[in-house]
Length: 439
Image (tube, rainbow, N blue to C red; front, side, top):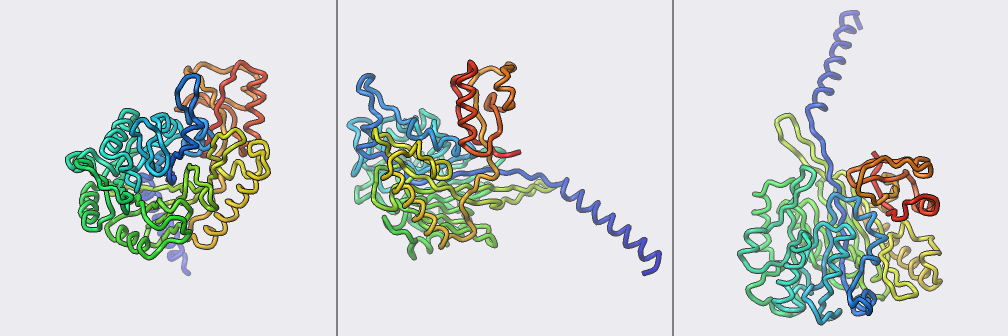
C-alpha cells in the first residue's frame, strides 16, 4: 500500500468513527421494565386468615410483603385479578367475592394494573362487575377487561398505559365465564377473533410503542399449551401484538421469546396466590421484560424486547395459617422462614417441577439471577434531612426519588443482618427491604 493510500485509509477510518459517533448521539434510547404475574385468587381459607375478630377488619398485606420488593422494581407490574370485589358475603370458590382489603394489599404490593376478564368475572352478577370496577377506580388501580357498558368500553378500550415516555396498548380477553350469562349492560371481553381483530385495528391506530395481550385461555392443570393457544397467539402476533401473556391453567406452561420476530408469549404464569394445593398449583412465575425504545433524530422510534427472564414464586402457608408469596430465589434455602420440614419438601418439589418444565420447553427465557439488582434498606422517613448516625453512615446513605435508602447488598441475608444492626443500635426502627436495579 502506498503512502497516499495509507493516508486515505486512515482518513476514511476517522470519518467512519465520526459518523458512528454522530449516529449514536443522534439517537435517544429509553427503557421500560415490566413484570407480569398470574392468577390472584382468594379462597375461603385465605379470606378467613386475614380477618381480625377484635377490629372486625381484614388485612392481607402480610401475604404480599415478601414479593413486594420484586414487584416494585418494575416500572409497570400487571396481574390477573381472578375474583370479584362484590362486597359481603365474602366467598371463595366457586363464586368469588373478596374483601376490599385484598385490593388494598394488591396495590401495596406494587401492582399498577390488573386485568379482570376471566372465567370468574361475573361470579356475582352485574353488581359484582360494577362494584369491582368502582373499588379499583377508587384505589386508582388501572384495570381493563370488564366494563360497565358498551359506552365505557368504547371510550377506554384498548387501554393505553403511559409511563417513562412509553405508551402501551393493553388488551384482555377470556375464553368464557363458567356458563354464567354476562348480565347486561356490563361487558366482559370474550375471545372472539372477529371482535379482537376490530380491537387490534383500534390499538394499531393508537400508535403506541407496543401492543400487549393478556389472555385467559387453555386447559386447567395442563403443563403444556395446546393447539388452540398456539393458534391464538399466532393470530395476536399477526395483528400486531408484541407480548402475549396467558393465565387460567393454574399451573405453569412454557414461555417463548422469538427474538428474530421480536415477539414473546407466556402460555401460563400459574397461580400468583391461591389456596389450590394440588401438585403444580401452589405457585407460579413472575415474568420480567424490558422494552427498549430507540428514537432517531427525525423523532422516528422503534421499540423492541431487550431482555426477558422469569422468577419462580411459591405460596407458603405457615404453621399459623398465614399465607406468604415467597420469591424462590430468596427463600429456597431459608429454613427460618420456612421452618416445617413438610413445607420445605413441597417447596423443593415445586422448584424441581417448575425448573424441569421451563428448562426443557422455554425458548430464550431463563430464570432470573438477580445479578442486575441489589438490596437496599429504606429508612421510611418523610424528610430529606442528613442522616448522621455512624452505624447508618457505615453502610452508606443515598437519597432517591422514593426517599432515603441505606446500603447496597448483593443478597437478602446480608441486607437483613444490616437491618438488625441498624434497628438495634439506632433510632431507626422502621426499615423496609427494597430491591433496586444497579446503575
